[in-house]
Image (cartoon, rainbow, N blue to C red; front, side, top):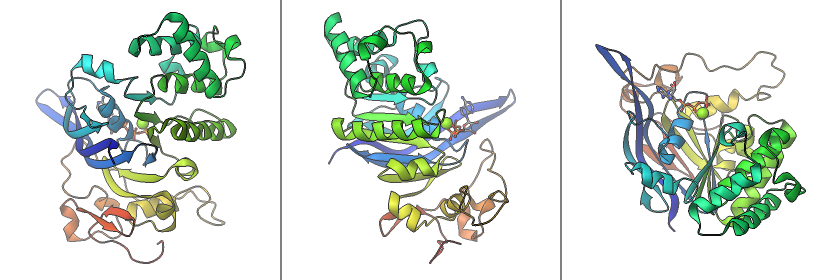
Length: 326
Ligand SMILES: Nc1ncnc2c1ncn2[C@@H]1O[C@H](COP(=O)(O)OP(=O)(O)OP(=O)(O)O)[C@@H](O)[C@H]1O
Ligand SMILES: [Mg+2]
């Protein structure tokens, strides 16, 4: 089966530092995974581990000075190195993205319905009234009541949850092969969060879209994802089916992340923290980036671990724990 998204050794570096001391922030380092159509792949990791950078690299949204190597194929077409014109053609068409804050993707001065219709007209040869009809149908599909009432509203007249539904409707307007949702529910309360996740789940079934769902929240991963990738400091350390990840976490970092979940420690008042600090990504880091914090570090970790299959999981670690969670 053709993967709707296939990353192979994707790396992203941001040139930074002072004149005379140029550095590169290595935000994403050699990431490979695939997402099939109709699949929700969750990408999880702490703040700053490179999740958004990875998404923005796929969508061609990074500054031109960014150094991107490796491959990202969307519906079998390479997207790294595409021209601006080709990227504009791809965005909102083959691939679409939903951000955390709907207000960053919506024009505050424009009726929300027209914004969806415009996305349709940008990629399909339809008349104005056909685009409006399609936009209204999409508004209904994403669960907005009274779509014809809402159509003419400016974004500020809608609640946060309704705005996020509009953004999702616009993202799906041209039936993308790939939908990237970067923390799509983080700004919403728990009830709305569950509703939006259910919506994404329902839509991927209806449209057979591949979904890359980015979150720092393992609860979100557990709710809707089929498979999960765990990122640490720009590297993908583990990929597993969701049930397997929770039942049988393999990588020491995955185990630490699960143990640090709120409520994971019974009766404990103290906040679970992973000892040590995320490495400075502008420094050269040889080998496994988790090694400096890893309780299982051995000499071999100075070399980047190869990813190996273990049951249904794939994990990059030279000294895998065996047995239950530590
Ligand atoms: N334009 C940029 N220039 C330099 N460094 C950047 C730039 N954008 C991101 N970074 C750095 O790249 C790393 C990854 O950041 P990124 O925003 O991708 O993380 P994230 O996993 O999405 O975090 P969060 O969960 O907070 O959204 C961080 O160290 C960040 O400071
Ligand atoms: Mg982010």
